[in-house]
Structure formats: structure tokens, C-alpha cells
Image 1: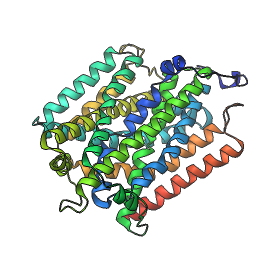
Image 2: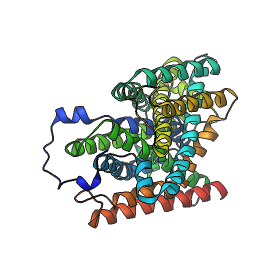
Image 3: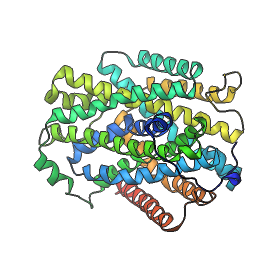
Image 4: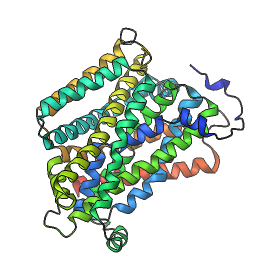
Length: 417
């Protein structure tokens, strides 16, 4: 492990595309996972119920997402340790277990949401849920057991790229620019149901497992201080990309459902697909929606399952890398496998995807104080010149406090208002 006390003053770095292509990956993967099945469903629900009224929020969340994830990059590269390991070292094992409990709760909710999305796409294409689950679980277990970190990263990026089809869906929907501009600035702040979806969208963008995954990923990829500028760019591009995709899903559903009789709550993947496909063409609409949702759900399943396995292994003090063979890291691979199988069995038993997806995102918003609190405190303990300090520390504190307060406020009002 790298020691934080051995960090020298920050040298001058010159950006190069060769270095960027070698470094890029953790940011793109975690951001593609951020636009997961639950986030897609949340964005679709937002567009169906409120038109373009939640579109501006998607853009506002870009810098907030970057600020949060850049801190994880900084922590991982400078310390050479995962997030749970750092919490254990600085605050003790008890606080580490609290953070891990928070993470596991978020990961389980996210995993069920992703697998539900994949089961829904399977049903949309005529494949029974049990068969879909067997194929997905088997493929992801083989990938982890047979592949290195770089192989898994490349698979995640390729699969996640299917999310870009949502941009085509939004264009095909033919949104009215006048209605889009007018709707995006019409904010019904006093509507509890609107605030519930505000909280859901915040939770859909800033997720606990993202912080843990990206920090572990930059450590496992063995990025160094010299890679920090490229890693930040990787994160910035990913932050823009994920919110563009979220906005595209919202625009597509708002454009196709605004003023139509179908506007309102959507109760399944099939219902969401069927709501937009008449305006895109039956075959094209189902194909595009299925590809996009499958890409988002698979990459997020990879990320959340690896995150749960890595973080629990970190706190237990056992090996937790894809570079180790299963016999060398039995706890890591065992947790990964058991989590996937348990999630698939729950999905086969039946679960309401939309209610689960939106509820999970609100839960993420309510967990923000713990996740972002530790993130901020750890960044304040980094050695110079990487420590979070001065005016930027104040800006970060204001951004984090605003995200936490508004997430809690809108979440509580949305649930009980």
C-alpha cells in the first residue's frame, strides 16, 4: 500500500491523449453505471408525470456529481487505499462497519433494481425471467472469475455504450423546443409528489456505491499522482455523459406522453416501453429501449456487485482484487457470487420494478449524510498539496450540504407529504 505520509509536493503534469487513454476507465464505468436501470426508470417516470419540469435538475446535477466523484479519485490515487479501508484507518473499525452497512444497503437495493430491469427487458422480448437471470448470473460470474480488472473494465464500457441509444430515442421522439424550454423552468416546488421525484433523481445521480467503487477502481488500476489530471478528465466526461443520457430518457418520455392519455404512473418495464414505442415504431422502439436499458443494467450490476464484495473484504482485511485467483481471495469471490445468486432468486420471486427503482433512489438521497460526510472529512485529511482546503473546501462543503439538506427535505416530504 502507498503511504499518505510519503507524498511529495505535486509536480507539474502535462496532459497527453496517450496518458488519458491509458488512465480512462474508472470514471466512465462508474458514470455509465450511474445511469442504471433504476435511474432510467426514475427519469422515465419523471418525464411521464411532470413533462420537462425535472429537466433542469439533470443539468444542475452535473457539477455536483463531478465534485463528489473527483474527491474519490483524489483519495484513491493519493492514499492507495479503498474508501472503507481509509475510514477504518482514520475513524476506527466501528465507523467503517457503519459505512459498509450503508453501502451494502444501497448495493442490495441497486442490484435488485438492475436485475429487475433485465428481467423486464427479457419479458419484453419474450424470454421468461428465470432464463434471463440464469444467463445474466452465469455470464457475470464467468467474467469475474476468468478476467482481470482491465478486462472487466473494457467489458463494462462496451456494454454500457448501449445506453447511448437513448439519445436516438429522444431525437426520434421529436420534442417541441418551445415546450421543452417553457416546461424546464416551470418548477412546482410545493407539490409533494414532485419533491419525491426530485429526491429520487438526486439519489439516482449521487449513489453511495459510486464513491466506494471509483476509489477502489483507481487503486486496483494502480494509478499514480501523475495520472490525476487524466483521471479527473475521465470523471468529468463521465459526469456530463451520464446526465445527458438521463436527460434524453426524460425528454423521450415527456415528448411522447405529454398531453396523451397514457401520462401518469408507469408500473413496469413493459408499460414504459409500450408507452413510447407507438411514437417510435413498435420494433424500433422496443429494440432501442431494450438495448439501452440492458446496457445500463448490466454495467451497473457489475459495479454494485464488485463494490459490495470489495468493500466487505476491505473491512475484513482479506484480499479483494480481480487480479487474485478465486483460491487466493475466497471471501471476495464468494461474496460476489452469493450476492448475484441471491439477487436473482429474489427477482424470480416477483417484484414491482418501478416502485422499487424510485424507492431505491429516494433511499440513496436519505443516505447522503453518511456517505458524503465521510468523503468530505477524509479529503480534509489528505497530505498537502492534495488536501481539500481553502476556498474550494468551502465550495465543496456548501455543495455537499445543499445536496444532503435538499435530498433529506425533498425525500421526507415526498414520502410523507
